[in-house]
Length: 330
Picture 1 (cartoon, rainbow, N blue to C red):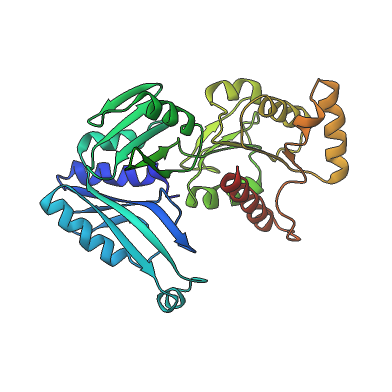
Picture 2: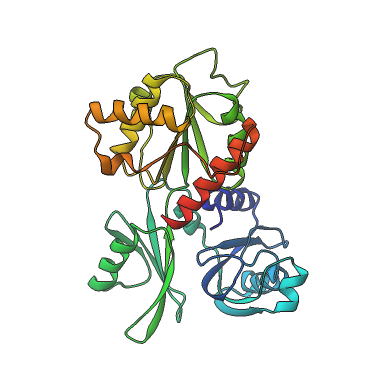
């Protein structure tokens, strides 16, 4: 799914410059559609856009339709088929179909996207009315039944948006979880290679290392750095279901500390650098401090997908691939 925080940031810039904005959201897919349900694209009144709903296949048509919605108001539901010919031209494996909900973006809606707590926006696809469920509170024009609220609260634990028919009316449950977080313990060369790639695919990165000589803004510009031990650093960070923890530090004390804390959290991914032999010693240490076999199995070690990686850059690629796999199938 598109990085909601990135799209929201651009929308804020446009609205700050007085531009009206429309939002296109993928609400259903069939076949090998390039972008999953929940993917979004924002369009400003001058035709500028951010995000994607089709990987490029029908973006021009969606932009045109969104511009019309911006001018006239209201909403529309668009169906697009990506033919085999178009798919081949765009370099895709095969075609598919997508259904897109297009609306004029009301200013209050933009404040939903950047929140660090999960939300569910329920959209009535026949009226365009919507309400937001957040921490058991509902806000918006759409009246929600008790059953719909219960469904939303169950869905809020998910990461996938979905369409559902209730009493013959179609609704879209737009799941807006916090930005995926990547916590890296160890300000080493692999971290320097991994961070730009992780940022590019939508992770918010935080790096932790108790060694002042390793962790610095010069070596890690533009991201949050915490020069402290994991037990103190993690108190500043919520390790929730949208969090990945990667330990790259060549020191068993902060490594064990970070992994132990991650194992007691809901982090969707826990990866640790090291050989099979060093991981075996790590497992023994973790068991000695009370870690269960079930929890230890959550640790991806040696970290990364086995692609025969040798250099720091190749190891970073293998880690990112495993992160993406875990995120998309968690």
